[in-house]
Length: 258
Length: 367
Image: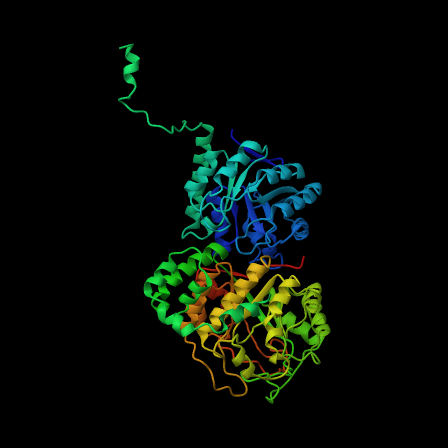
């Protein structure tokens, strides 16, 4: 059985789901169901425990692993405080660290992310840091106690696909933690591409939430992730950079000396 | 270097000549680009671009969905006081206007907070007139301490402060600053601000930057549309937002496009700004600065606001009263202007849902 282990939890699904950007919270349970996801992330800053109808947690089944994220944090200190708030609110001990001090491109600050990861891992959190795909930073995240590494494929929300492919491939090859491609994946085919490359999982939000039919789009992503994973496990046939001509120019050499 | 240096660069710019030169093929080329520069933004504000509003709307909507998703944040303003020492030709709070003045006590603020928070709102914007004697920084700090118990995000729209005073506000629990330049044209600014501390153009112009330096989370700017030819004011607002976002990348910069509304007192010299003009402004802004917050107030009519939801608005007010104590007091102070959309929070929530968007009540918390 091909399973993914993160923070001591065994996951069958390799698709993680984001909950921001949906037109209606009421649709989220059906999206979760059709995506078959087992891990759902939500911004702690949007969790409103006081209002039942507005509380995102009301729409997530108890069997799902909650992955509260620190969206809105501009530095280590804010990320740490938000993570602690999430745990105090009853969101469990998983946390996705997002430290973003760049409102234009929403690119993560790896330096602050590493510091936050170290502090929170020591406090017993299962830390999944969102990061710019950089090998040295990823190695430091491993040392800091991260449970997985979440490199971006393209800036959040852009649906531009895996633009950082070479760098993500290096992380897949060199880092001994699960690699979850987060952000930028705009189509199921791109999710399949990440999985074919050997990524352990992908996280998708915008592409599902802003499609016309989020429930079916979630299903499409689920199938694509499975297809990509299966292709990876089956070992893709080698790519050839040259053609194999049916009438080779050097064929005469096989016929012995002239 | 402050934004004033950029303003000076464009002060003598021949806008009319530039607009005459913009062709339809320029607009088509600009709409095919991923990122545009200030002159291309200005071209989108030109009369020539008016023939491309649908194309601009499609692009703006796509960018908004990518950046913000199908979500609109709800908030409401809360007027703490309407005492004012300025004489501004366009404002109902003008010191010369004999309107009913009022300032809420801390008890009254708490009552108002209870009334507003019972509607489900978690984000609030507090406002005063400009009267440091009646509503000093310490009074506002005390008000914020009370409001913090009821709201997750508190913005201020008060007279401009020094950086240190903004820091004091943040320490008390404020996370957002709104300060409108009203009009970027320095000559008109001087003309409409007849007397009072608001006459100081530069101190007001640099207030948003002082807020950024003090580490406000959100800083919101704008020009009061109608005080000058709108295309120019729209341009200066856009490049001001761009200046702030580039220099302070960790602050969420937002723009409001308020149009002048009827108010106490008389102000005759209003430049026309049609619905079409306002839409063009908002679309050009979104295409120029895809990550920009765009706020819409109840200065606009219900029907018009409903149409704008899908065009890139990120934040909209609901259940609005511009009166001091308007949510809970029998004895209210007079409003700053007449609102055009008096729908309550539940009604706004339903309208946003009906438009295919999620009404967001909470997007921050005190950490």
